Structure formats: C-alpha cells, structure tokens
Length: 227
Image (tube, rainbow, N blue to C red; front, top):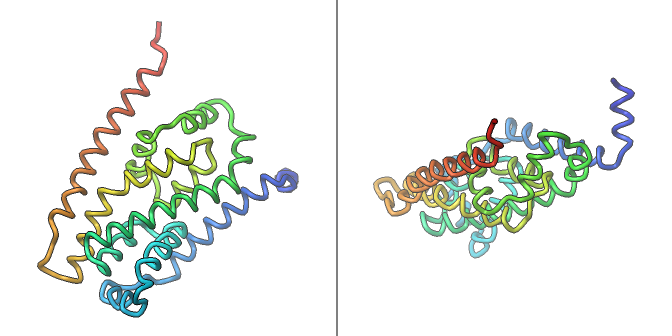
C-alpha cells in the first residue's frame, strides 16, 4: 500500500492533487482554531478602513470564502457593516471573485489528476459537468451538498466551462445575498428589518425547488427506457 502511494506521488498530477487536499484540510483546521468577529465588532471595521472598506469587503470576503468560511457569515457581515443593499452587492462581488479563485485553483491542481482517472459512471458525471449550462450550475449551487468554496474547488477539477460556472454561481447566490444582508443589517440596527431585502430569500427557496424538479425530470428523460 505504501509503495503504491509512493509510486502515485511520483506523478506531477498526483502531487498537485495531494497539495489541493492538504490546502483544503488546512483551511478546515483553521476554521476550528481561528475565531470570527462578533456582530458588535463588525461596524467598527468599516470605520477603520475608511474609503477602502468596499474593496476590502469584496477581496476579504472572497478570501474568506476560498478559505471555506461559510457564505452565510460573509453575507451577514457585509449587511451588518454596509446595510442591506450595499452589503448584498459587496457579498455578490466577493462570491464572484471567490468562485473564480476556487475554480482556478481546482483546475490547476486537480483537473489533470481527475481527468486521467475517471471511468464509468464518474466519466459520465464529468461529461455532464462539461456540458452544463448556467441552469445546471444554479441547480448544483442551490443543493445543500457542500459549502460555497468547496463547490468552487470541486467544479475546477471537472470539465466544467468557466463562464457558465461563474454566471450560475452569482445568480444562485443573489437571493440569499439580499436576504442575509438584510438580516445582518437588522442585527446592528434592531427594528429596521428591510423586508424588500428579505423577500428574495423566499423567492430563492421557491426557485431552488423548481430548478431541482426540472433537473430531475431532465435526468429521467435522458435515461434509456427499459424494454
């Protein structure tokens, strides 16, 4: 077993894939050790950054997402600092940048290894990702299968196309971005819940049910009918 692992790690693609796994493990361990700021501490961060606060929100939020911090926290924090509308906009910017970074890292470190080894059903699944439209990406994003950053890394290891992936990631993130940003703003300003901001979250729930149903029906139609 040890010899087989050593032979495998002599391959450059296997070493890069192992580096990707170590990176994800390190991010996961850091989440258990490093504490996140409380809601009361968040508004003061924007005051200290001044005019650089929006840029820091987008770039910092993206780095937190690729470090596997849940998008819920990033969006709540953006809403608490900047308010429901600006917070949602910066959270979406962070999601777009994080999706691009995670996809690029997954493609660089994991795609060659995965492409050389997928067989059978996994190969058909990889082909499905390669053919995926924006609607398919939205469907996967709305499924509660993994965190935002982990899904981005995973997509990079598949044959998925980058533009549909980025577009689908942002569209799928939009409803909860407005909803959670409104909740975050309400935490720092009690009694001022923006229901126009919360409404897209409810629409997102309805949209996810519709998209999952459409995906399921499309998959059933692709399967050969038994004779």
